[in-house]
Picture (tube, each protein chain N blue to C red):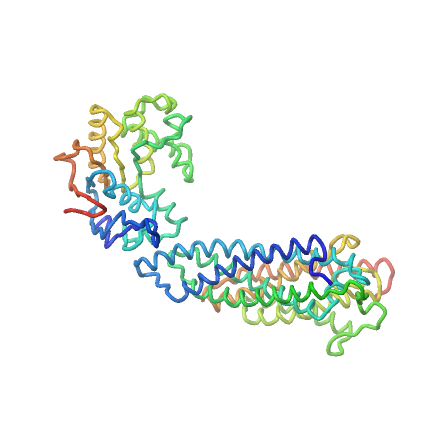
Length: 317
Length: 225
């Protein structure tokens, strides 16, 4: 077993190390800023902190943006790894090849949402002369930084424990009967999917940020299973191919990027207004409009495959 | 209300290093609206540093600079640039003109960042050229101008945005006596237009000049009033 599995992984890990080091330097300065910041003071310390704040902001804006972009590179690198991990046909096999893969992916997703929130708060903070959200922004980053450290440890454990000789399970339910959480049936899952989507669109229209936040989180969970265990079957046109990753591949015209991308963006825009309200006491409800738009795109694409399959064959899977 | 209020201002270069030194020490100064103030002192006395701080070109190490009720030392860089663009006109010793462009184009440069229409821009540029008496050279390349003409072009550029405050750093240092006197005449026009003007100079030409409201002496980074 080796951590240097492919060129992509080496590049990925090198970039991760650079970003973690830059974030650690920023975090060190953030602690000083959080302890001594007093915007109204005109002391040498405050002016020095303002310069530091400018530098830290620049570094963080760069690193946080890089982390978001790097997530896509990570997914792409996992796909590429399927060529050297025995038994893996796509990222599903690579992610599930050890205990750390799924936890790492989940943590990365949570961090992406966190980074998105941080970028918005940062933008709002820089719009004002007095940096009104500085302390909250840096406190949020401190939490995210702990997540980044955890993510880095998980990455090391994950990449160094990918088996290269023992075959892994891929799309592990291919030859098994569908096993859905909480004993759900596919019909119930699809019903939940469309009902919840309708509720979110209505709540977004009514600008109910807290209710939309809750429904969006629930929808993330439901949509993941609905796409993997129901809509995926129609995308692959195979009754037992239940994989969230294969649709990211060329064979399926990379449609997975559009499906997952619009879903995650929709969820992001749906949960952000409530969080931003909590942090800044400012309304950001216009994002709910984008949430509805993105989620409708997800639903339309997914539904298209089902309708198309039915029109072509006259049956449902 | 005072136009410019400077309180307990310090500027330390190379902090926490062996070669650290204070370019400005405990400066306290009030400049009233429409005043013309001269900062006098030898080279290295801190005049230019003070001007750059008032103009928001650099940040102090301590203290505050309040212009129109706003502590400009606290402005983030992007807002500082916007403030400079709108509120301050700079006249530099070395003119800092854009070589290769005509007089008209040089004066027009600050207006290129605005949303004004062509007619309004042309009107403002013409007014600035008239004030600086450089209208007759408007199509000439700045590279072919004499020192005095270059200076007048720089003055026109400084006032084209119609700033309330004009900062001039050694404006007559590169001029002969005749052109220096032309500058004094322009200074009188500034006075008539109720501009607040601060001039850093060691030129004795400004001594006992009627148009000057106040002369402040500087030495080793300190004010000697």
